[in-house]
Amino acid sequence: MEIHCWIHSWDGSSDANRNALIEALAQQGVKVAPFDAKTSSLTGILLFAKTTPDLQSFVQIASQAGKIRVIGIGDLKTSTSGHWKLLQSGASDILTWSDAERAARQIKARIDRWFALDELMDQPMVSELVIAKSPTLRATLRDLVEVARFSEGNILLLGESGTGKEVAARLVHLLDPRANKRDLVVLDCASIVPELSGSEFFGHERGAFTGALTDRQGAFSLANGGTLFLDEVGELPLPLQAQLLRVIQERTFKRVGGNTWAKTAFRLVCATNRDLLDLVHRGAFRADLYYRIAGYVCRLPPLRERPEDIIPLAEHFLRLASPNRLPPTLDESVRDFLMQRDYPGNVRDLQQVVSQFVHRASADGSVTVGCVPAAQRPVVELDKSGWLDSCFEQPIHRAVLLGAALKEISRAAEDAAIRFVTNEEDGNLQRAARRLGVTDRALQLRRANGRHSD
Ligand SMILES: Nc1ncnc2c1ncn2[C@@H]1O[C@H](COP(=O)(O)OP(=O)(O)OP(=O)(O)O)[C@@H](O)[C@H]1O
Image (cartoon, rainbow, N blue to C red):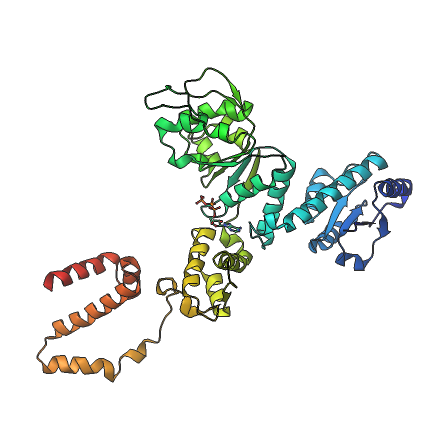
């Protein structure tokens, strides 16, 4: 891709610097052109070097298209808070001027990184594994891709359950640039049996304890050359946290029952849906461990903060569920239904809803409102006047003629309503009670009494 570079405003008094910068950039292979309004449809980098009253709004407009990066350079004469304001308005960076060669190198390095990231984001390895159409998740993902590809630090993934922390950990592993990288080893800290935790993490030597009949490799050894993903890291018991400090810091460990130190080289990714800093403040998570695992902290936003991802994710799950055929398509009304629904379990919830569509999609390959299972359908106010008609009255007339008492008749009507709703809600009494406008307890009692008197 051709790199465009423009200089927007430059103080006339420092024209010499401007010309020197243009020359130094040319030596780096970056050609500078004059800026004009049509520029905003191109992809490129815009340098500005003068503080003007309308600078903030100018930066905002220039960077809004998402294709132009704005870099401030030179003696901008803004205070530090002015720099932050410019960044907030959309500037990518503000560089301090020392000389033209250095500035040109800094600009070129940023251009290279920017384009490398653009390319990575478009690669199937990223775009087919993590669906991210919302600006919120795209920005988060772009930062994570950069850290995964261009650094080796420990990564901490935060986010509610089902926001995609494990999928992000897999991406970090895939993007690891190490030649001959080994496996991704996943350890769920919430499900480790305390008595076996030492062996799970460090491995053991034969005879180390009763039942240790052979040598065993632990997670730190299995992840050597690869990635170690500690899921639910907030659940680690305190004594185990203390044992992990050294290996996370030094990448050396001893097996249970062993005397020699072994070296290991893994990338550490941890995840939790707990507020880890709050656990630190309450003394339930060691501060020193926190600062070791939180080299780079990435918060995955809940689905409610990025509704633009709902339909692309639903379509992604439909594609995954139809590997050998054309995936079903979502009818407009089903899209509306998906957009209006709540997802307390985030993407996992959406995935479950969509998987139910796949089984019910009609042969023509479309998912219509009829494919939404009854239990998932929104409860809407129906026009209640229609049901009190002659059809309703006929069996009542018959019951009266046969001598049934009023109590018996109303009981039979209530029983019929309860049976019908409970059936429709697949036996879920809470939902059935809500639909009938009674409490769970009242419905339970009513059913128990009904059975009693049957
Ligand atoms: N952005 C995404 N693109 C594609 N699939 C996703 C995305 N986010 C989540 N998923 C899918 O949703 C499901 C739940 O995601 P995942 O297991 O990564 O969540 P989690 O945050 O680790 O959840 P938990 O905290 O409960 O372990 C998985 O099947 C995952 O593949």
